[in-house]
Image (tube, rainbow, N blue to C red; front, side):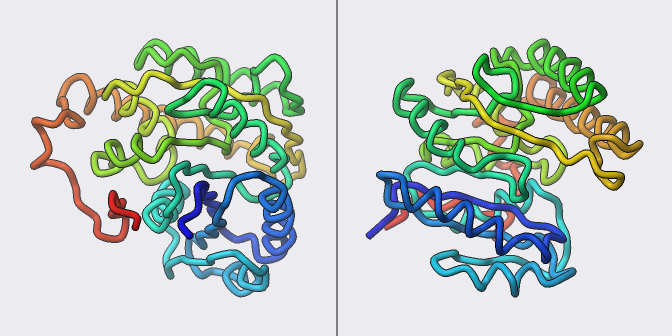
Length: 263
């Protein structure tokens, strides 16, 4: 039977924790009223992530040898999915996977095209440092100005899409790393999928010494995000790359070919 819900989990260098993370997500899915599939995508065979993820029953584990970025991993998993509703959630303990049930409830309530997990939703429970708060706020102001997206937070690693949206959007995408989720949202909105809403999340960020949220790497990440985001704006509004008239220019990648027929 074809699942109604597909959950994509991108994985990179998480050999020590991924088995526990996937079991936790699977427990949440088992309690939902939806039939579902859980697809774990290993973004480069650089440690024991693939082996340890494969120990979890009921998880489809896929991947490829070389690290290509989170965006590529999510899109790779989406290309393997069969559900009518497709979501992705970051692995790790930062995001409480129980938020999946809330995001799906919002999806039905609003008859949404896309639901994004949001740190700024009034009932979200979040704990993250002031550096991240300032950069996040500034970035969201830029996103709203550039693309007209009326959402307060686009960067949480928990989002849910109607399959019909991805069927239209996926063949047009370019970004495979930093701003891939902004590209999906901006292109979807541009194509007329305006029913984009926020749902609450529970996030407890790891503030350890190697954490990107408290290190100089955060500002490098922010710079790369800004460059990718401006490039999306340029392709969207100047080159008109994402329009149907530019179809012959779209970059076809057979590895990321999103299937329309899922029977």
